[in-house]
Length: 294
Image 1 (tube, rainbow, N blue to C red):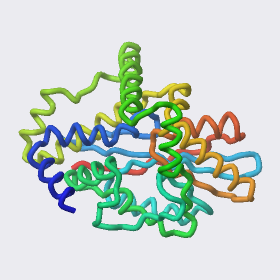
Image 2 (cartoon, rainbow, N blue to C red):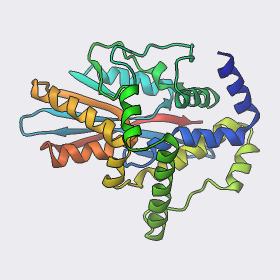
Image 3 (cartoon, rainbow, N blue to C red):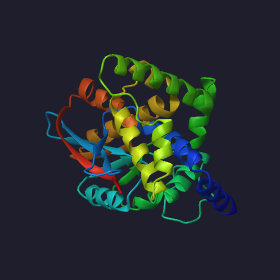
């Protein structure tokens, strides 16, 4: 607990660090088309939104890809909790032991390093941490992910570290961004030194920084990671394999309406599997407001 309080004090004193850490903690939610930013009418106003995309097969079974962002408004998680009640099964991501079910808590001692970072950033930006916002006690929520030991063993077999993995992802994203800008698919980033200075001089520094981060995440939403790179990264490809196997088992058992509740970066790979291998077609997309700014 002392560690968390010290981290929050550091973050409050150094707003530059806050923005960099927030971007780092959300980096896995950037490279997809399941996340978007919508500009608001006034200065420092807008919404960051995630999608629920629905697919159906010839037998009438339905699968929803529920794109998650790990820090968001409380209303966003309330809306997802209500939506989950409509599904027969919700397969969710969490690297944990098989018998570990998250419960809302103010005790962060058991969180991973990334979890600690996300929790601290969420508090600074007046957002909710996903593990506290989602009701994982619902009977239809089922974990479909690697255990911590499995993740560690697979990464070791690939001689992969978290640092090398994030570095590879960052380099791939930079290349994709340069190509997208050159082909005028996206606009250059507005996250510049001048915009940061302007945000830091705002009366609502946290709100202005939140706006810049949301805008950057939304702008990056059309940057697609190649299937080859995705499959190489344990934190994406191998975890997708586990989730999709659980989905296939659920469908074979006769489940009529299933959901995959995973980080937005996983959605592109999951959609490819649904469309190309499992015989599904996309039928609808609904958008949910994750961050409302101010």
